[in-house]
Image 1 (cartoon, one colour):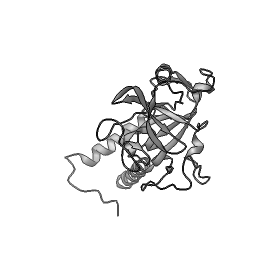
Image 2 (image 1 turned 90 degrees about the horizontal axis):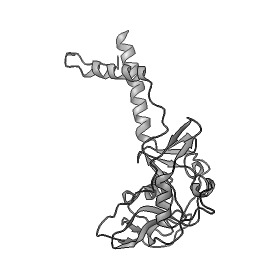
Image 3 (image 1 turned 180 degrees about the vertical axis):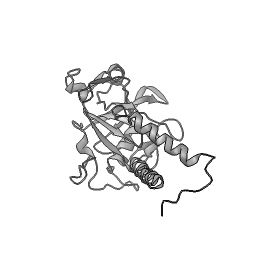
Image 4 (image 1 turned 135 degrees about the horizontal axis):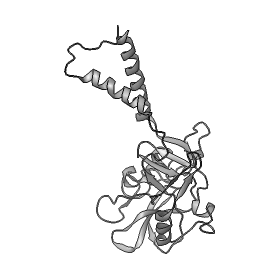
Length: 241
């Protein structure tokens, strides 16, 4: 009997682990979207600076966007918790310092390496969108923010995307007066003057709105792992019986 219970529990834990590995975006409610691959939480409102009343149209220069994002406190009405420590999406300068423009696999241009920035990963991987041009630099159809009606976990999770550039977190390596940016409507990542008035899609590290595993269940899972891997066990568990 204990053997059957243990095998059933192991199967359930394995299913949970597999589901977590395959998942991408989760609507946590309260205007929060969790990306399980990047382990970050996006604010679902892609123009919250305007929605919140902070700015008339939500477009700000880089300094103001950075200051607003870092000072933002967002209240989650579902869990009645306020979150801070928001930031602009990260950018990783790949290759030689600065913009290495290309049509595929660089840190600047179209079809950029998805590890180059969190928002590039969101656009190309999490949302499954295409750039204005393909990897050969040829224009292609169905580019930009395309909402798939059969996929409830894509663009439809977000609101108020703007047909303009969004600021990224860092300055350009070769020019402190410029900063990185990403255009969600065509997949272009490049840089521009910090004086430009662009938008902000804010993000926060971790799964800020996830419901924690109940303590009892965690202890039970820990106990199971201990039973399985204990050095005192000399007989393998055969769940096929």
